[in-house]
Amino acid sequence: MKYAILKNVLNLLEEFEAENSLGRTYPNDIVGFEKWIVDGYKDDELTSEPSWEGKEKGRSAESVISTLIVHLNRYAKSYSKSALFGSNFSTQEDFIYLINLKAFGTMTKMDLIKKNVHEKPAGMQIINRLIAQGWVDQSDSEVDKRSKVLKISTTGLEVLENQMDKIRQATQMVTGDLTQNEKMDLIRLLNKLNDFHQPIYDKNIEPEYLLNEILKERRS
Picture 1: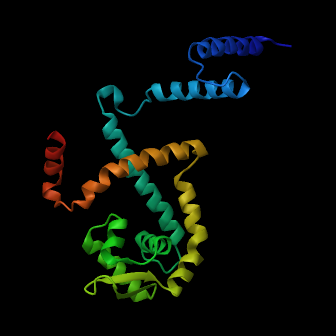
Picture 2: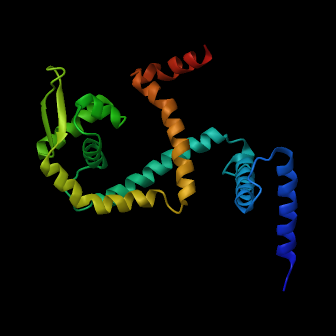
Picture 3: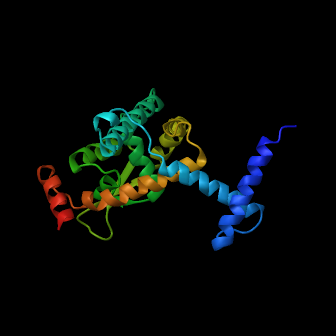
């Protein structure tokens, strides 16, 4: 029998008891020891800086993140296009709009457009196409008679359900080989980014002024 692993475990136990005696952060049992091991592993992962293309030539982390997000968006679109092949959907946005109406219920045209982070002209084209297909019903708002509210129709629910298996396959492909914990970490990071950008988007600043206005706000 080889005792190298056992010796390593005993050394870790000694280290665990020594650290724990200083602050008693973890329960002094096997559960506490396991958590100490996992937290130590996570700390090593978080403090080690990854490598990326162009890093040695001064390419910034911000540049890499921005590029990777753009690339992931394109990968996701290619999977979505495959999921839509042979269906009655014209674009990826068609079924995303339907999914939002199904998930969040009746909403105004502008609320639906903002939910999908679209500009008004592009969003209105999608909505008009969905109405023409009979997948979305519109009616006068009870709150504001000047605006229309949208609701997914029975036909829209049927056409969406007929395509959902392929849509789920496409969304699963986007997350690749991430573990469950990695998916949760990614959701937390993406939510943090979304929480930063959403208020900026909601200001509806014209593109020609956007960067200058936001940078001015951040400096003040």
